[in-house]
Image (cartoon, rainbow, N blue to C red):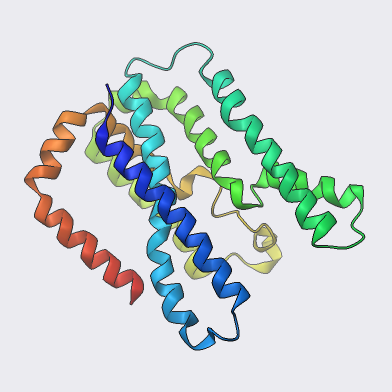
Length: 235
């Protein structure tokens, strides 16, 4: 069964990713001429970042909807071939471009170091694949428990974990002595930074007809909350 709403969300998310990086490149290249407008543009650019959690939502939604009894044999192997192998290739391309081209005279060891950082730390734009694979594994480990546990309890706890984890990095900042500040994507890659979206998607996929009915019933509240959220982010 194809879910048309997922196609719409995926389309909007892909377009948002493209626009996000286009705007970022323009701001970087035209830094001096756009200096006066950069802050305003950057505030609106933040709205486009919904695409990353949207992709996590899509991934887990489809897993919960397609495999209610558990994923089939060879699930990870298949996704390793079609997703992780291309990820390794792009990680290598990024390492070569960043070290061999951007840094004149960079040696083989420097390129390998960058490649390993890309693959194991998500230290480049493809970090998202590492996030997705974490949730593939979590789905395999936790789907039975999630099926038998109250969604209200799971969503409440996962939201608190998600919020506290991100607040630590965005408000309190890790102390320099901890070494965490030197690991660029630390708050991006580990699953606690995204776990609420994962849990929400699981229950939305599992209870798809009920989820659609709720969205339709409270559609005006959804519109209003989306608008208020966007205003708060830009402000």
